[in-house]
Length: 186
Image (cartoon, rainbow, N blue to C red; front, top):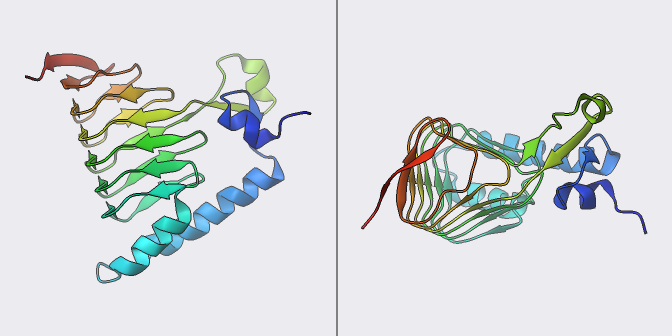
């Protein structure tokens, strides 16, 4: 049996993002994020309900400052006490697993999506996506970019403006473009 475009997308294979059911899923996400981004600071229960509808799974005490944007939402799996500051984006064309006690400064970008470097599939409107894992007790500084396929270990700090293109181990401070381990934590 041939895989659906969604199955290809989640398997990290080339897929056609313009497939109608994927377009409909993204429209659902756009509708929910628009509703979320129009809530006020006094509508915390409404915000929580929207995120529970949007995300694949969500732990307790999640706080995301609007505006927030994502592709599907359903591929995001967040643990307890996630905090994302203003302007964060998650392109969740593949799964994004976020552990407990993760803090994201403003404008953190988490991208599972990418385009082929070979121009032929790119011209055929084919795309790719690779899952991202962020461990427990991780702090991600402002405007950091987490690239497709990356894993960030527990208790790690990613410095502001970093571009994370490779896995970062647990218990370190990592910074830069490309992001590199600066020091091991005790």
